[in-house]
Structures are given as C-alpha cells and as structure tokens.
Amino acid sequence: MRLIKLLSAGCLSLLSLAIHAQTLNGLYQVREPVSSQTPDERNQATQRALETLVLRLTGDPKALQSPGLAEVRKDPQQIISQYGYDAGPPESLQVDFDPVSTDRALRGAGLALWGSNRPAILGWWLNDSTEGSNLVGDGQAAAEPLRRAAQHRGLPLRLPLADLDEQIVATAKNLEGSDASPLHAVSERYGADALLAVHAHEDGGQWQAKWRLWLGDQKEQGTAQGTDGAALADAVLLAVSERLAPRFAAKPGAATEQLLEVQGMTLERYAALEHLLEPFGARPQSVDGDRIVYQVSGSAEQLRAQLGLAKLQEVPAGEASPALAASAPPVAPGVAAPVAPTPTPAQLRFRW
Image 1 (cartoon, rainbow, N blue to C red):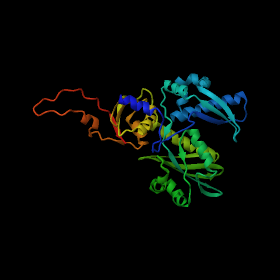
Image 2: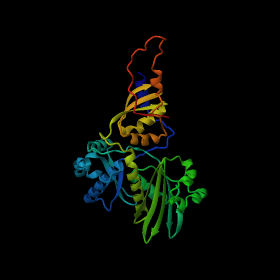
Image 3: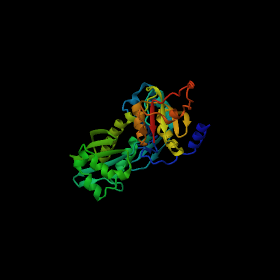
Image 4: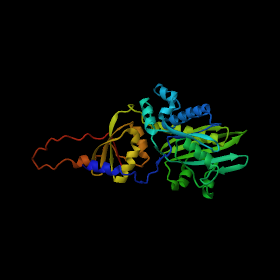
C-alpha cells in the first residue's frame, strides 16, 4: 500500500529538486533552413530534420541507416505530428515529431536512446578574430549561434556572464590546458554538470576550434572547423553530443535486467528519480520507508553516469542495506532462528 501511495503522489507533478541535470524542452522539434516553400524543398528539409532528430536522440551518426528504420526513412510523416515555416532569418521548416511513435520506431530498430534529462553544460567560449578576442557571455549577440547549435544538437548549454573576473581566468591558455581547476573556481556559481572549454579562431575565412570537455572525472577533447561561427558552433556541439551519448543512452535488450536500490527517498526525489530513470525502463518493485527498489535495464556504467547527474552516491558493496539488516527479528537465547526467505539484494545501490 505504501508503494501505491508513493507512486500516486509522485505522479501528481514533477516537483522541483536541486539537481543540475536539465530536462530539454523541444527535444522532438527540429528546425532546418530552407530556400523556399516548394514541395521538393520541404521534402529535403524533412529528411534532414529526421537525420538531425535521430542523431540527437542516439548520438550515433550511423543510426539512421539502420535497417529497422527503412520505412521511417521512406515515409517520415508516420512519426511527424505537424510542421510549419518560420520566417527567420534564416527561413526554416519546423518539424514536430511525435515522441511516442518516434521512440517506438527507434527502439523497434534496436537503437539506444538518450532521454530528455541531460547533463547541464557550462560553455566557456573564446573567439579570436581580426576584430579582437571575445569571451562569449550570456547576454551577448554572439551567444545566439551557440544557443541555436545547442538546441539543434540536443544539449543543455549555459553560458557565463563573462564579467571581468571571468575574462581574466578564461584565457586561451586555460581553455586549451588540460587542468580544469582555474575554470572550476569560477564555474561553481552556475551549478553545471560539465564544463566545455572552446578556443575558436578565424583563419583565412574559416573558423577552427580546440575544445575540451570535463564531466566528473572523465575528459574529452577534439578539434572542429566551420565556414563561419555558426557552423563551427554546430560542429563542436555535435562532437560533444556524440561523445556524451554512449554514457547515457540505453539500448533495448542490450543489458541484463537488474535491481537498483535507492535510499533516502522523498516525494520530491521520487519525481526526479522517475525522470532520470526513464531511459532504462525502470519499474518500481518495492518501497520500505525511505528505500525504493527498481527493476531496470541498462549497463552499470550508464546507470552510474545517469544517477551521477542527481549527485547520488553509490553505496559500497560491503555495506549492508538498512532494510535487510532491520528485517531480521530478534531471537531468544537458545532458540534456533526461523528460516525466512531472504529478499533478493539489489545489484546496484545508491543513496541521496
């Protein structure tokens, strides 16, 4: 009964919880530039939108060519709810894909899906051009191409204020360096999960960049180029998306079913946890006090990465579960302990 009460209350609303991970709005809405509103141009833009969406949801550039998506490639309309035109600039076709039918098609093709709850990224972006050096700040016009690229690639991007103190720290040397500690010191107030450092410069009419990404104790780096600043931003964030997706995307049937125990639950935490575990098909099995057990489908590494977004701590393997320890009734001296069924222990255990 306690499980039913908790689930019913948790479904009332997704209450606010102080975790950094961010739920992306418009994940299934794609905009693609068009030169006209002719049927041929619309069909081509629709195909590009489908490619963008599949890459956004899987992080796999080869996913669209999966044999299981042959019918969707042939007729994308079967997963589209509506489309329309945006005058821009630039003029674009806005395609709204239906989340339910889209996910069903992708899972049916055996593809791994990355849910809408994704790590919040703080972007330190320094542009060097003939006009000088500029750290892109949240209120600047130069921030707009970065936001568009982040939305296009399905990443929650935050930008700093770029005040004087931050400009002193976010130098080309620190952005290209392997030590993130100088950036960590000025990033704490933004409450992000990951740091993205980009040093971009213009060279012969082309834009190039070196980028580094820190998420927990994991690091990624690379280079990118584009014909202009907007194209470069899209290239960088596409590369970041492709590096992050494998850590969080859950592939149906690829992982062994396992039990996940989470301690320290409250109603607010339950609502947030349900959202975090959505990609893993989480099914509540039991509730005992502030402890809940789920059956999930996903690798241990992916679950650790996803739960790390909410700052949950993994319980050491040798530490007894409070619920299991408390379940043993006291036994009088000289009396044999009764044999009782032992609850199946969870393979992964975390606590708030």
